[in-house]
Length: 206
Image 1 (cartoon, one colour):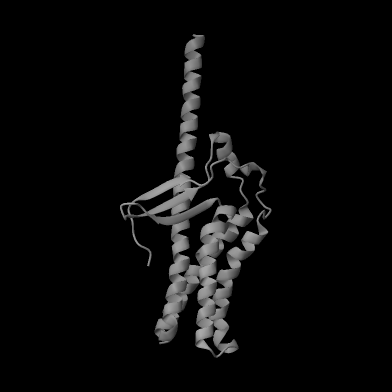
Image 2: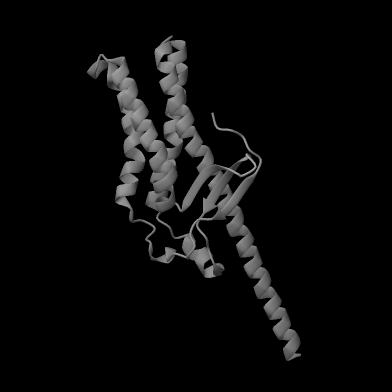
């Protein structure tokens, strides 16, 4: 299970500002990342559903599913989230031994960058969030079906799938919430500065 920690932090993902405005809202700019974002998790689900029809070996099926789930967890956590939606998360242990969750979002500078950030690929975003949300729900259904059908031997595999994919879902939802908060604060500060400049310029003219 994921350890709970109260020390959450939103930090910048990139040291340099990227040209987000060059990315189209419709085109998929990272086809390889988009493919592997779905490949491992869909493959793990299909192997779980059809392994008894294809192979009679429980051990081979279990190892295959665990490997696919592990590859999916690492790929989504470290690569596809950063490329497709500009988000990333991880857990680290401080020097004092305390566990801390770190949620990253792409750094945005200036209100013009705030507008261009909204122009990220809609297609990639839909693929990312659809795969991220649907698959943990499917593994949740597998958990209930395994429990009620008394297939206890599959329960560790199903729990691992639910935990690993649920962890990524939790982490990226936290990243998304933190990113929205940062963008809202940035837009508020921008309009506040513009209002202050206009007020000062009117006073100087008078």
